[in-house]
Length: 215
Length: 283
Image (cartoon, rainbow over all chains, first blue to last red; front, top):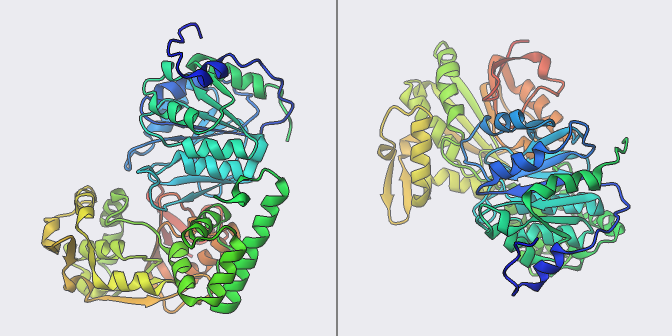
């Protein structure tokens, strides 16, 4: 936080310094969006989380159309949680990190995934906005949305919907992002709850979701 | 833009579900198109897209409009039924089809193929090209069906935007194409017109997977990236329809993220290629 230089953006400074508020609610889903540089950022965030982490996680990382199983196996080596490509109509369960499959949009309904091959949104399929918007509509205030590094504005519309539905929005501090455009677009889009340096996001998620809630 | 989307009141979501149900019931009763068992997240996304495109703010207003204006219904039908696709989509599927399915098909004197939910036809032309290159197209008849008459007309025309040809060409090569892809079409202005011979053995026809029965027995059924738009109950029903329409030892090919594994028809099939979702009926 001391590395803060650009004083023109007062909002960001304020968010960074925001006092800890106790959040008295059970989060039931975390959605994460990332693009350029996302591989390393994801490993850093998800690698922090213990195998007993009580909230399931769904991730859109922009991927090449043809990329196959490479991404899940890469993460699997760095995560204590189980990392898989999401399947259509698969039940969403704690202990798992679900990745949007290449060339499909990932949507959620309460408790299960749904895939689509609808047209790309802002040149992206999977699209972060599509995941975030459907998750916001299904989970309301039981949702945490996280925007990490990326070189486009995908996710900006999504976090706005998450906020309007009462969810919690965390954005990676653009200064710690390999590509700052995506975090910046998210911050400009809505009043995000936290702007955190990359290495603080994992611990913050544990803090928010720490108490295991049997469901 | 819309109050309905921005309200955090949990009751609103239930209201939206009610409105979506009333819309799909109304459309089914009045027009016969049955979207009642479509997968909710995609369905609502497509419905809201149409609500805004019509300049409306609620799903109920759209219901009103489509019931009174058939043209509005046609636009909604397009939104709800178009599946975006490309030629040789998922090239590895076509490569697997060449290597694992074609040798089986060679043993048949005549081959009936049902391509269910063919949308604008890209994958039908892909299959025709593949079969021709493998030398068995003359023995094949492809029944290409879709719920939507408008997309079938596009499919029949065999005319596709020229700007998709780069992707199509690289898919064709990755899918094991033997020839030169540009030999299959003529470029004219912004379009690629595919050789009419490619559809000599193709029958395009309207068929509704949700409400229509089987219409023949087939050696191959292809239905790719259609089932993901259905809920579990409807997926189950359609899988049953495929089973009943497939000859013994016939082949079922699904989309990359679709499986028969969790359905009641699974016991009738052997897995021909797990990754590419190719199955063979064995009982």
